[in-house]
Length: 240
Image (cartoon, rainbow, N blue to C red; front, side):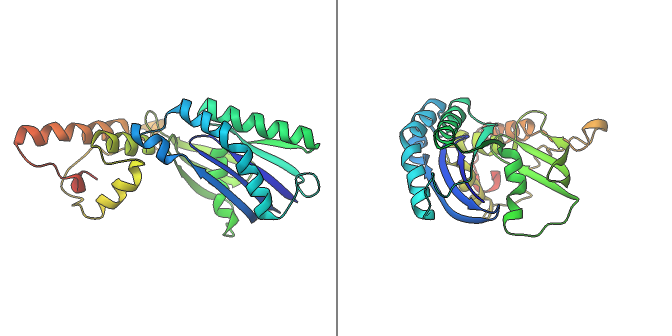
């Protein structure tokens, strides 16, 4: 079975052809980084407009690279339906559904958090049950996976996700966009014992597996004021 898959949940327009659930025949990604960099973050309106402009060309490229045709070779269409930026999601969902209906193919909406969770199955044989950790720009989730259809969320963020903390701290310190890349490189040169920032785990009753990154984000941002009060030079490496 060959599936044509669409992902437009945020700022990257991606279309792929996958055979039998594991073999990736093509995976075309059109990134919008240079269009959002001037604002040091994703601008939803720009993201959705670029998806509209690019999605047809990206789809054609994915089919061409895989050496398949929609009418003769594709068995089904899959598309990210949640979660994400509503405008970006609507572009991909509308396009994929229209394409599927016009070609007489079945289509299925995909929760891309579950797609993150199952991505390792593309390369590794993983035995059930197992614990899964999903860390993305908008979500931080710990879950128990009994099977592909049986997933229990054990903990999640009660406020900001890990990716949110990365993005906002990097933006505040003008590190560049996307901020996670810069933070990661700076952290390799810093002293992990330089600061005692808020630990993101809660350790509380029913929230014992939940996390909170708002305090860590605020502490990292407020550290700049501390540098100024002390007349010291800020160390981005140690912050990271």
